[in-house]
Length: 249
Image 1 (cartoon, rainbow, N blue to C red):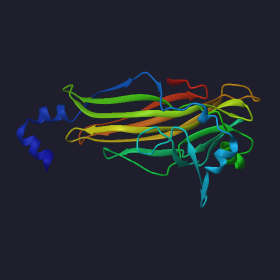
Image 2 (tube, rainbow, N blue to C red):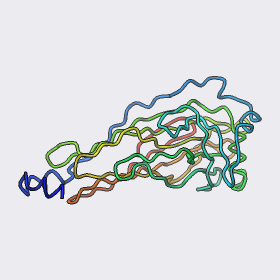
Image 3 (cartoon, rainbow, N blue to C red):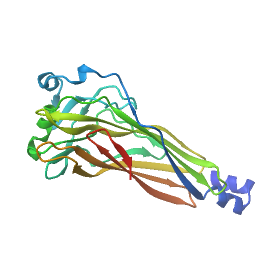
Image 4 (cartoon, helix red, strand yellow):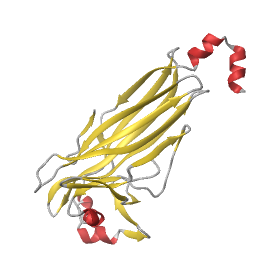
């Protein structure tokens, strides 16, 4: 009804121009280290274990960089499940989760960000995460995605932060990843448009040696913008490492 009303005020050609997606732009700001973490991040293992808790089949941790409200201060999150197993590494978390649905950010207070830890055994991965230490302050990469219609007018804007902590060690060796997540910051859709987004882990790699692994993870962010006349689905892929590196592939 609303679209029909719009069509009554403008010609069919103009309406088609307005409701057809023309271009998509992705802008990456300079990655920054966030929060105030110093020697308190290099805590002993026993203190970390005391802050974990179990609820049914879930184990929750006070992980650096995790915050379900869009910030990056510490917050309790579930360690999740084993989602990938490599020769030297195990990934914990959720393999895929929704970021935006029908133009609104999806906010969950208990969720599983991605951690990549040494493979002692897949069954013991959660306990291995509890035994890691020396984590960095969270690193944040802000990304802005803008869709424009054939008039060149902005019709969808999605801003989010890619956040993770790195350089965690296990028994004094390695460089691992924890609390890797995409946090939506802003979503806006023009009249007649909808937008959805989700994230998943695509793969893990070891950039170091078997004796001292350096974790790598590939994160895939999927976007879908649509109107009644046009739809565009795109994937953006990011590679992060246990040394704090971020690269858009």
